Length: 251
Image 1 (cartoon, rainbow, N blue to C red):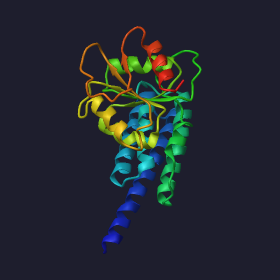
Image 2 (cartoon, rainbow, N blue to C red; image 1 turned 180 degrees about the horizontal axis):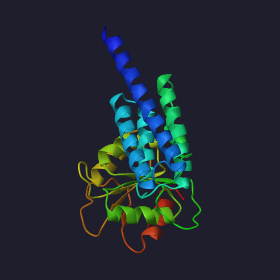
Image 3 (tube, rainbow, N blue to C red; image 1 turned 120 degrees about the vertical axis):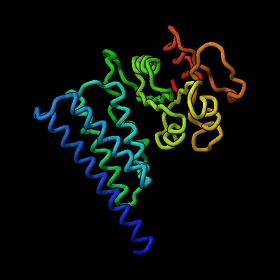
């Protein structure tokens, strides 16, 4: 077997595995809707299959699929139980994931940033009767209670939210997702928030994406690129975000 044949066999196996994961996800939704499994089991299975699908996409560089799976996993960021509304959203995601896989099979490029704007907003948050804008905000912040609080506040402002827990993941995802704005926590593992901001502002593919640093009082911002605003967590956070977005030209 030649190297080309071996690579083609690996590619075929990856495609088959991705199709199996998508099939399992569809079957899980149907099983929940017909009462075969309960909400907790459905959520657990969906999360497991989505994680497996991401591993497959990563192993064979299925870029569009990998980005969309991250967004699919992020949809369940704060979901504790599956509902019929969730199932409707999951089906929409699965259709788009299938489109990404089909594009990979046929070696066709996809602009996933366009698909992002079509996706259901994050589940699991009750934010009342809020008019959702078309502004997509990526929050790069380590998991925890503070992240959920900031996410909720931004959702209550009507923004479409993407959560990313790692600065290294953010560097990979931002060029494809092309969010309207990126908010980065100053304190992060791996690269710090300031490091990420510097990287984004130095890369031609991301330097025009508006970015702000999220920080508490104190701390050094000596290396923060000129013109990058600093947001402070507190009771006026929503108003501060709006002011910053006006200055950045988003609102």
